[in-house]
Image 1 (spheres, helix red, strand yellow):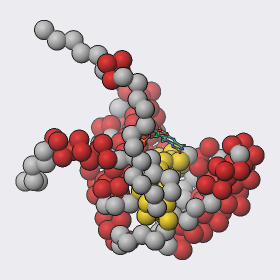
Image 2 (image 1 turned 135 degrees about the horizontal axis):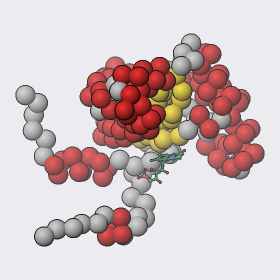
Image 3 (image 1 turned 45 degrees about the vertical axis):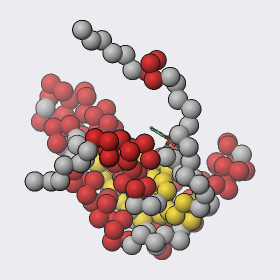
Image 4 (image 1 turned 90 degrees about the vertical axis):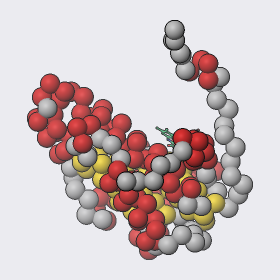
Length: 205
Ligand SMILES: Cc1cc2nc3c(=O)[nH]c(=O)nc-3n(C[C@H](O)[C@H](O)[C@H](O)COP(=O)(O)O)c2cc1C
C-alpha cells in the first residue's frame, strides 16, 4: 500500500507551484527523472470513464532546441507583432518542454461507447488534460525545476510544424505546452487573488 501523505504536505506542494518564467537549460535533474515524473502522472492522472485521451510528448536536449528554433522562426514574429517585442523575446528561451495532446479518436470512441454522455467527452477530455498538466507542473517544481504553461496551439502553423517534425498523428490536437527549466530568479510569490469568500461558498447546518 502506498505511503500515507499528509493533507498539509499536499497543500504545501500545491501552494509551492507557480508560473515561473526566468528559466535556463542548465538543468541538474536527469532526463530519466524528468521522464519518470511525466510517466508517473500519465499513469495516475484521472480521465472520464478512464478513457485516457491524453498524450504527452517530451522534448529534451537536441529535440527541444529544434522545437525552439522552429518556434523562433514561425511564432516569434507573430507574437512580436501581436504582443510586443518583449514577449517575442521571451519566447526565444532554450528550456525543455512537454506537449499535451488530445487523441481525438479516443474522444470519438468514448462517445460511441457511452452514447448518453457522448456530448460531454470533448469537455471531459479537456478537464482530464488540465488535471495532468497541473500534476506535472507541480511535480516538476517540487523537483527543483521551474515551469510555465503556454499555448502554442494558438498559432496553428507551429502545431503543424511540430506534427510534421515528430510524426504526430493527425488525430491528435495540441492542447498546451509546458516549458520548464532551471529557475534563474527568486521563486515567485502567489499573485493577488479574489478574496476566497467570494469564490468559495459554504452552506452548513
Ligand atoms: C487554463 C490556463 C491557461 C493558461 N495559459 C497561459 C498562457 O498561455 N501563458 C502564460 O504565460 N500563462 C498561462 N497560464 C498561467 C496563468 O497565467 C497563471 O497560472 C496565473 O496567472 C496564476 O499564477 P501562478 O501560476 O503563479 O499561480 C494559464 C493558466 C491556466 C490555468
